[in-house]
Amino acid sequence: MKSMKWIFSFVILLSAVVFLASCATSSNAQEDTYLTLDINPSIELIITPREKVVYANPLNEDGEVLLAELDLIGMQLDDAMDLIIETAIELGYIDIDAEEAFVQISAISKNTEIGDRIKERAKEHINNAFKDRMMMGRAEDKGFTPEFLAEAESYGVTPGFLFLAQKAVIVSDELLLEDALQLSVEELQAILKEARQDMKVVAQALKDEFLADRQALYDTYYPQMEAIRVQILAKEAELAELQTTLVAKEAELEAALEENKATIEAEIAQIEANIVTVQAEIQTLLASLATIREEFHAAVTSLRQAFLVESEQLRAQIREMFQHRHEVHADHAREVIEERQQQRDQIRERIENWQKNRP
View (spheres, rainbow, N blue to C red):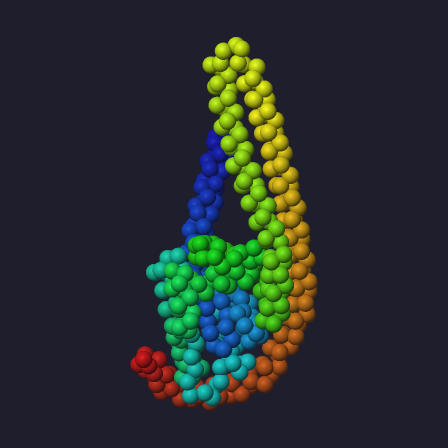
């Protein structure tokens, strides 16, 4: 009996631990930070409050190449920033011989305090990566164009949130920008994470072609679905009116004189028949809507599958580009860094002063 009590207590304790762990995971997910880096390769990351990378995706063709051989998922922020800078140098995206180099950073999180902290930590790690390689380089806050700032203002959102919403629209088959702007930061981040398995490394030209084809499907199917939805709403309003009339007639029947009941009963029978007819019409419309929706999803799925096959072939080419750029630039970068190591202390101090004092 004592053994059974012990097992029961252990099960309760284990359940509590699992529950608390799941709560903590959920809480942390809501406080993840969406981070973008622009070198010239542009990439996006999602970082947990504990500074772990849980999502990484390219934002342009050079970003495709930069991430072709990198697996950042699960890495700590400091290691990820260092690896990104190192790889960008080895691929020639950051010129080892340049007098100055800059990386632009933007960050957005539901928790503004955490988002700001992650951004500052990312900038700090990038600055350290430059110092470790004896380079005049630093991280700066991302600047948006006046047009982009005006667009964000017109929507009543921050530029960072608009940027995040636009990226979620790219990877989601059914999300429009107007809808994306109504979502929360964590909901948009979740869309990016979920889509990563299907659409994580593709060239911009192929992505644009896919989006254009998908938009054509929207233009074909959405007006049809919207027209049916309007009809359904009208029929539901008609049904509600009939049901209200039926209730009134039933009350009238209860209070009617015997000689008037037959007439009212006939009216009730007609109303009930009309209700059945309208309900059948609604079901027919719903079935039509479901059919069109299924056709739409099948068309989008077929398009995406074809897109993924093409993108896989393209990824092989991107990996070849990665190897070629690496062969051209990596050896020279290492030689320059090794030469600068001889004056490491003086150079690091000069770089550190430049990073701090630059306006």
